[in-house]
Amino acid sequence: MYLDKSKITIKGKTYSRYLLRESYREGNKVKHRTIANLTKSRPEEIRAIEIALRHKHELTKLSDALKAVEYKQGQPVRGNGSKSGMAGTWFRGGQWQRS
Image (cartoon, rainbow, N blue to C red; front, top):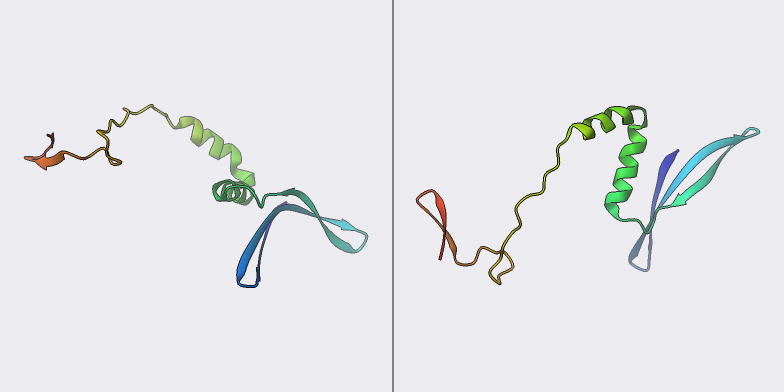
């Protein structure tokens, strides 16, 4: 099983396609079967599948490593109307100060 990536440019526009495929033999010929069309998937999903296929014999190690990671909910970010939430804030004497 492998990820088949292809790009083609038509009239200045580039199109990409991503297919999850497998190879098989029929007589003396090697053929390819498309398992899934991943073209409309998000780039991070395609990258995750690519990594999983590259390390398919080591997935149990990866799974064990992920179980050891502890996830915690952080404190919410409070804003005061600005996008960054940092308006009216400055750094003084080694501490963040708010006006």
